[in-house]
Amino acid sequence: MPPKARPPLPPGDAAKGEKIFKGRAAQCHTGTKGGANGVGPNLYGIYGRHSGTVEGFAYSKANQDSGVIWTEEVLDVYLENPKKFMPGTKMAFAGLKKPQERADLIAYLATLRD
Image (tube, rainbow, N blue to C red):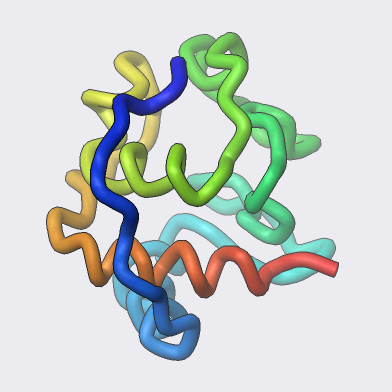
């Protein structure tokens, strides 16, 4: 389910994205190597990973079967409105409507890898 063509995101600021992560995602997700899953899966290594593949996390069928690879473009569309992008997801997050906030969060998520 590739996203429809849309304008590219503005450049992201990973430091601002970390603040967004801590304020909007850290209550459900961790982002540390080897970190535990919470209500949501550990997001360490999400960038470039196949959806529904974090060991030990019970994903929705929609997420497991989506075939999604988390690229900048896919994360942009998903983070804007997760339930619209992936009907059936368990993610209880309304989304980030501002492109700059999505760009910043994606820039931060891209740092969570080896």
